Image (cartoon, rainbow, N blue to C red; front, top):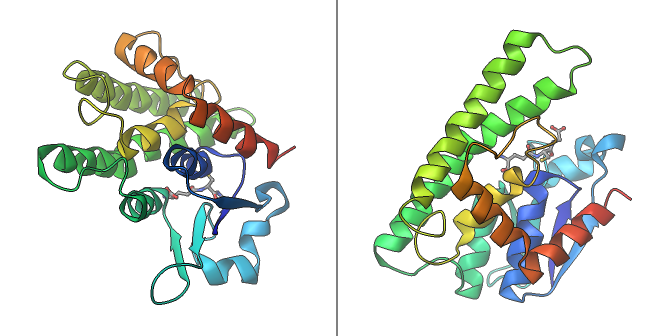
Length: 208
Ligand SMILES: N[C@@H](CCC(=O)N[C@@H](CS)C(=O)NCC(=O)O)C(=O)O
């Protein structure tokens, strides 16, 4: 059984989406960020960075495996299940390209816009700078989708799941997909996948 320490957040939702898509058994363990549970000694022992998600695999060969960083968790699960990450070739390289773009570009841009939007009276310039960076990364995703239906190629992969986690929260950060028709098509397509619907329901229930 896999355990996922998570809350109703964009980085968390990626993990149950992957697990539902892969058909792996798992248990969600809530870490209530509103109550600061990510800052407890017990949680920091699992992730000194004090952030969700964290995956614990108690059935890993060689003993318990604990992993943080959502993109690393997605790679771990893809390799464990043999799904959503090609084993060789150009498509695999493109999945990693998108995952690194996600971790270094798209995710920080959305996080910054989210943090600005949480301020009681965000300075107009900070808000506009944050949203223009979100538009830049969405433009890059839109550009990738001009060449193929999914972020890294012709088939759905963990790169799509990584991007989807944050794009799912575009309204909360004050962004719009209107200028990005291919991102809109991709987002609608992924939102309708049964595994995604199920994972979102379970993730939102963590904050209920
Ligand atoms: N790079 C990390 C970011 C994780 C992250 O920022 N998690 C947020 C929720 S989406 C969190 O735990 N925030 C709690 C805090 O900052 O105190 C990943 O991809 O997993």
